[in-house]
Amino acid sequence: MLSYNPWLTAALDANATWELVALPEDMKAIGCKWVYKVKHNADGSVNRYKARLVTKGYAQTYGIDYEETYSPVAKMTTVRAIIAMAVAKGWSLYQMNVKNVFLHGDLHEEVYMEQPSGYVDQTHPNLVCRLKKTLYSLKQTLRACSDKINQYFVTSGFKTSNANFALYVKKTNHGIVIIVIYVDDLIITRNSDINIFDLKKLLKQKFEMKDLGELLYLLGIEVIQSPKGIWLLQR
Image 1 (tube, helix red, strand yellow):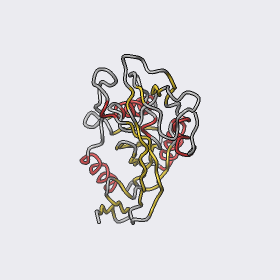
Image 2 (cartoon, helix red, strand yellow):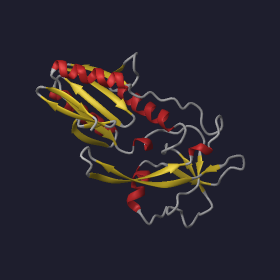
Image 3 (cartoon, helix red, strand yellow):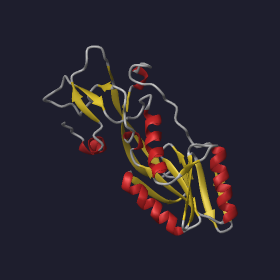
């Protein structure tokens, strides 16, 4: 494939997101577009510039190119409970982010997409992309990504909570590790530094992770941690 902006498509190539095929007569190809965004820090300064390839998932048809769409997301009551527990026990809160999380889900349905603008294979311009991995705005993306992450945590020894399937707990010889997942953000707390180091190493073996250090900002809430407690601000 050819691209005049290789940096935009490096993640797509690395994940083998699609293969070029002829569109079957009984199927239709959905469109797509590039979406650009400026991500800011809690103080309003620019953190980084992002580009995403977004599908026109609204054109999908239930029963043909998607089925189940439900995906568990951490409840705010769970997030508050974990923060309260961390304060009570004097534990620190950490945050990690799964890079390009929506490119990690395995796609089992037959989904076809037009070749992206600026990324058309000049030798096969009439072919379409048969998606092998999920992309932003597909109907089943959140479910597929959640299934992939859940499978990895369960096989790594974590237990899911019956009250919230986005809450994971693992007991080790060094203590306990607790993880709350909200789409691509992981809130982590534990009672041992060894657990944190082991966990980060474990996650980076499977996913491309961004280590954000101590929890500072989540879902529009600024988090300030100190020996006296934790403050949540929405300035």
